[in-house]
Length: 315
View (spheres, rainbow, N blue to C red):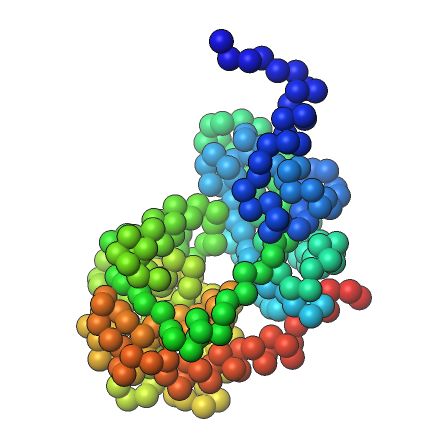
């Protein structure tokens, strides 16, 4: 017979229940409670929040270090655009949200970290009907930044074509919490013995990675960004295009898979990796099998840009 508990038993069990990874969770904010907390065992989302059981919500992930956060306005702006695309109101405006993010980072007392913002339809029931949810939910979480060894960039990474197709149409332009395709892409890459997956659209053109944008330097030395018809424009990609334009020609066009076998460089771009070279694709060596000069230079510029243009956490 299953045990029937009371409120006291619930809280006792909750306080003593192991929480995998809890040492990496530093602070969180729950808009329903209106406060920031630092005990990760209290970091709970109601099961009836449509964010959880329907994937009805959007999110952003940012990076902070040395008392400043990078591209805060760009991330908040994209969150608001994603929310508007699914008719999901945010309980606070962009400026108030940016201030909340900064405050949670400060409370974490971390010198560096990742901060994630989740905006959901809110709790209220378990159907598809959004009318169940009287108020949207808003959560902000700060976690430790998993800093990579320098060898990650010095050696480069491997990538493989994933068997999971790219997201289609307008859904690919929304940074929703429904990341099941992304999870399956990453799993598929690992199952195939590679570090990162690359997905392709129905016409066979390169789309993106599981959480990274992919670009290449073609045979003519042009920095090529795939047309993002079925991929999300990353904040790092957008900044990288501007930085790359200062030292290499930049173009946007469809990229067929065959081109990846003859290009000079394949580069992955993302918040946590900046820019890293793919040195093996589908088991084949890319160019000379070493990180290329554009990737190395672009990483230097992105690191410098983050240090120069981060927004202070404290006023």
